[in-house]
Length: 200
Length: 221
Image (cartoon, rainbow over all chains, first blue to last red; front, side):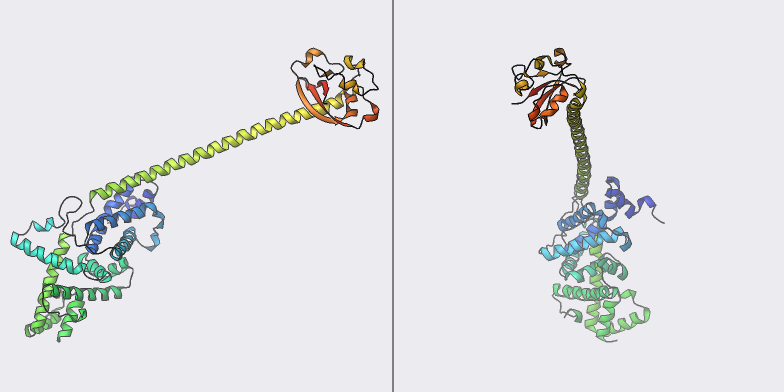
């Protein structure tokens, strides 16, 4: 099913650039969640993720003409800005582990998943999640990006490569390496002997 | 299958999802894992990691940007575009004012220019038009025509000497126009001039009536 002409991202962006607040709001609501999720998974910090999303849309607001429709959809353009902001954040700030913080709506980020489990399961899952979360956040940025995009965002290699702006082969090798490092880190976290050759 | 192959397969083939391998490869991997304890442990850790990643994915699947971000952005959006509108209006108003000022200045200058031109032309015309006016100046007629003080003598309290044919009451609403001319030109106004000094350059005030004709003249000292 195709999106009606008037609801297409580029049309909305054009209208927003002319001062149509409704179009801007629609554009924001359409993309904010994916951008926030990516930023949160990459930074592990809800404040940083919030800042990234805000920066992305402020950029869009300030310089809407920078978007070039011939180079891809608006979503990919926004994602590219978000990715740059995330990378800058990772370079600039020391890493913080605050995924456990409550999010902006006052609800805990993992609350929805928690309710399905008994306290024992919940505790186990929390521990496991925390371990993986720490391991993911401990990965170097480029490997973390590949793991986040392919494992957490469940994108295909092609999509991940397009969003990261690198060839598919690069994404594949980064993912391979990222997985190996992740496993190695998980082994380390569990005090188990290191096993994965790629991580050595 | 060797341990290295087992690792490579596990990492390459969507890595942590061994179940996605094709049947033959999966059987081969399972056989290897049943014989090799460390690979079995590795497979187990893959499974755990897969579950953990899935759990992590689940916990952050439904997260959304806090509402305050949207509010901040919309506020900024409103400010930005309101400011732009105000700025446009201000620029427009400034241009309109500048144009109005320019038009006003132009019209003023044009009026001034017209006035100047009219005054000069009147003075010029007087000299020409009055050449045929009979030189009957009541005040100057009595004065000795051979003497230059003829004109100076009338430069008293009244200062102006009526030109021939002008009536005193015609000078009530007149305008004083200062012009430079040769002394000889005064004869065109009907005044007696010393012929020896006709080429002297003098300045005179002309009293120009509403009809544009000079009614009286005053020599400047």
